[in-house]
Image (cartoon, rainbow, N blue to C red; front, side, top):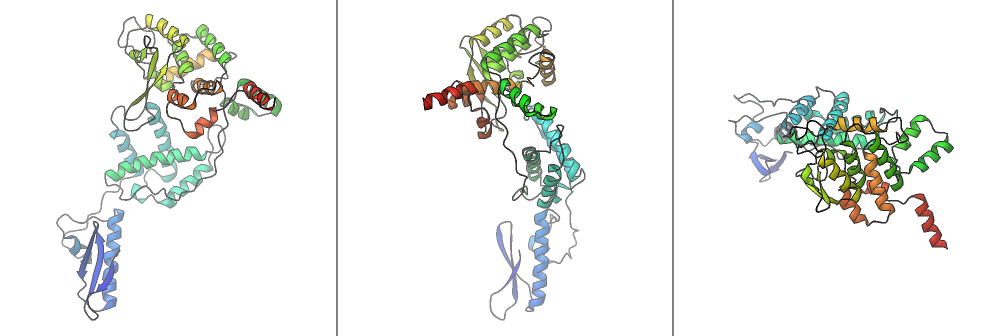
Length: 411
């Protein structure tokens, strides 16, 4: 912002402004306040254009002269290239080095891009995206519905804007934008706390007594966790029905360590120390700037399953790969789609078809640890970084344990 000062009462006006964190003061060469004010306003407008990225100072121009020249320079004004939202997204993904973003995260970011571009516009200049436009995105997105038919949750919208914030930081580093991401003061619809994880018996009771629709029942099954006896029964089913030898040890590893599907897919054979009785899991979600690991003890069941699997392993570095030719070091690790497909094929049309994916085993491990009274710090160490909200969802006891605790309290 530019303003006027005077060194002496009847002297000429001085125009004062800040540029590049320095205070600049130059004579307006006039004692006419109106004329000096107009010049200060022109300087102020130029400063704002430069700050917004709409005006570039020519390389061979003196900054002060340029700002106070009223645009009468021999060198033409240089306007920066206006990069669109779609173009910056393209550059952002192309700039990522191998392994910088997990495959699942990249796929999710691409989905976020689709929704952002769909509302803000592919040709929207990124430097012109304002707080008002972001609020419009939130409002419009909150009225849309997802695949389940339910309105898009505030959590999903926040994740989409978080992706845009990462792209904005990328653009800021390349001078496509000149200001921080305008997220301050954005308002979201109120969110509903996710329901706690529940046993199969609890879910079936609610479905039977509640006269729920198919979509409501499907939502309840998303909260399923298996009790310890149910985990054993489920593993027996997988052992009997799996079409490939790799699936059973991988499912046991998920059930007995709480590892994510992606962590098992990227694991290597030497991560399983059968002699030392632990497995090292390679994390990607705890820290953006570096790869981290955590160690989880091996159960007897998991050690036995891995010993049998390694005896018949194809020979590649990857722990879990399809059974190609023996000692074929080129056997690739299971892909996300392969792991999901083999899992679903194994449980389809069985009593355990209600188990909707690998994440159920992770939630079951955490819930059973909590039910057995294992110290929360140990659970967190085994499970990896957990948000407080996630901890609340599995930090509970099964119904019979709760009843026993209440009876012991009241005698």
